[in-house]
Amino acid sequence: MISGIINLKKEAGMTSHDAVFKLRKLLKEKKIGHGGTLDPDVTGVLPIAVGKATRVIEYMTEAGKVYEGEITLGFSTTTEDASGEIVETTPVSDLSEEAVDLAMSAFVGKITQTPPMYSAVKVNGRKLYEYARAGEEVERPSRQVTITEFARTSPISLENGRAVFTFRVACSKGTYVRTLSVDLGAALGYASHMSALQRTASAGLELSSALTLEEIKEKVNDDDWSFLLPIEYGVADLPHVELTSADVTEISYGRRVKLETSAELIAGFHEGKVIAILEARDDLYKPRKVLI
Image (cartoon, rainbow, N blue to C red; front, side):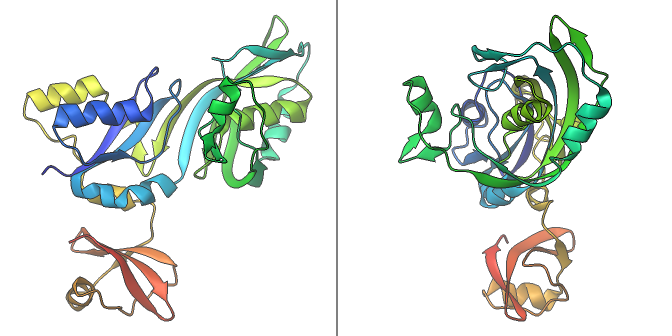
C-alpha cells in the first residue's frame, strides 16, 4: 500500500470529489481522501491523503486556509460568485481605497456568517444547493468563523459602473469567501460578488509546490513517487512535542504520558517522525490516534 500526502493543484471545472476519484484510478489505491473541499470554480491547493495518511485528514481539514481572489462591486449573483445569474445591480461611480480598506479591516477577527444557498451545508438532511435548484428557500444556520487577514492587494479599477480589486484572506475552516465578498459589498453599500478565487495555502501546503493531476500522472508513469509527502505534513498545524523513547513505548500500549505542554491537542514526534496525536486528560496526555 502506498501512503503519504499529495499537494494537489486543483484546476477549475472539477469538484474535490472528482479529483479524489481520478487519483484513485491513477494510483490504484482506494484509500484516498481530501482535506478541505474546494468549489468547482475555485482553483489551487487541495491537500490529498493516501493510504495510512487518511488517518490525519481531519487535522488537515481543520487547518487554516489562505486564498487570493477578486471582488466585483456593482452587482450580485445567485451563487455569490461569477457562475451565477445577476440578482441585483448597484452602479459604482466613486469608491475610495481608504473606505474599502477600513471596511475590510472590520471583518478581521471572529465573525458570524450565513452559508450561501448554493452550498453543501445540510438542512433537514438535504444540501442547501438542492433547495436552491428547486427554487426553495430555507432558514440557514449561521456559523462563527475566524478571519486572521483580509486585505486588498491591488488598486481599485472603476469601469462601467463596477469596482474591481484583488484581495488576500487567511481564515479558519468553514469560511465562505463568497459570502465574505458579498458582506463586504453590503458594508460599503453595494451589491457584490466574488469574481475569482484561488487557494494558495492549506494545511501547511503552498501553491508554489502543488502539482496538477497531469503532472502527477507523468510522475507515476516514470515511476517517480517523489510527489508523495510524508504523513508529517498532515499534522503541520498542530503543536509539535518531542517524545522520549519511554514515551513512545507507553503510547504504543495506549497509556497516558506526562508532557511539558499546555495545548489541548498535540502531535507527538520522535526522531522526526509523528508517533501519535494526543489529547489532554487532566495533567496527562492520552493517545487519540497512534500512527506507528
